[in-house]
Length: 220
Image (tube, rainbow, N blue to C red; front, top):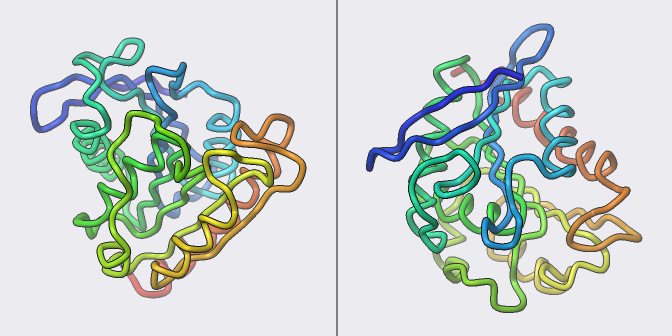
């Protein structure tokens, strides 16, 4: 892991860590963590599993803390100013390598990631884990179905079988609104994916591998 700092457009300094593959680099990824006010940070086990899986597949990964979290400067922005944090993280990781950039978010991070991607064509694909669709979590609402239909990149929607925040039935509705979405449900677990981190990460890794392979076939 290589500690890094980078700045957002509004001047907030964020802390992150780069995880580099040992061999050939095929693309890049940004990982967005869960709700800062509910203990979320870049260091949760599911996010560790995802970053390791992606690095093993030739992807440079930047995991970072949203503003106001741990050693990132600034203050919590209710999921609104955090969109700029993701945008800055994408710019930072793309300094490391060419190839497609995948944005992976879990819970709060998934909500922020999908809203950032709506008008950012640098995002080649989205992996959304436990996308919050039930219960009030002090986050902005999901984009409308018409907005989601404009999101042309591939999207992976992944949640646990017993995820109360991201139930499969609601995810199917989101999947139908997206032009290129696939759904993966991890049996026997919930929103936190305890003891199923590697299984979930492998699904994200397989999705990412397809994205970077397609990116190499079509060029930068």
